[in-house]
Image (tube, rainbow, N blue to C red; front, side, top):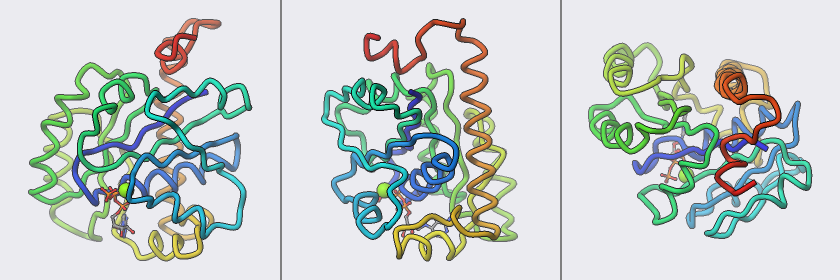
Length: 217
Ligand SMILES: Nc1ncnc2c1ncn2[C@@H]1O[C@H](COP(=O)(O)OP(=O)(O)OP(=O)(O)O)[C@@H](O)[C@H]1O
Ligand SMILES: [Mg+2]
């Protein structure tokens, strides 16, 4: 089982939106579990409005044992985290196979990106994802340049589109419809798969993955 975490201390950046979009996109080809660690309950509320059974919503306790999920056949665990820096976050990020950090292309959000990059410096597979990017904005090029100086940047951005919150009204994801938002979500999932594939290529066959090792397997 691989673990993907959406994290940034900055509130409202797009963690929950990316988490459910990626979990839904991935669940068309694999067993996916989605965990909501945010007391605000964004993902839990969304799931209550959802008819489809996949991805599964799962509960994690603070010690984060996830062996039972792997044993139950879960292939990808997507974790939505709260804003801020909860005490468990460092250890949890270290054990994740991939960490995505959504950032809006505003001066305020870009200012907050440097300390996040510093805190993830030793993680081999993390990336910024530009989120809520206004269409045709001059801010995009500058934001890409600034983030690229700090770390890896996903080649796919989430544009500011009403389709993302509109899909969530009925507990769905934009990736379940056709359109530009769906294309972005699927493209970001393809990118995440490329990071996971690169990690596989550097893990000798038969050796445990990153999250397996961190959980003592
Ligand atoms: N690409 C987008 N286009 C339009 N609206 C968006 C987009 N991404 C997120 N939103 C909206 O912006 C708000 C914040 O997004 P979201 O809840 O995903 O951020 P978050 O980082 O999880 O926030 P928090 O830190 O409070 O957990 C929500 O109302 C969401 O519907
Ligand atoms: Mg959230």
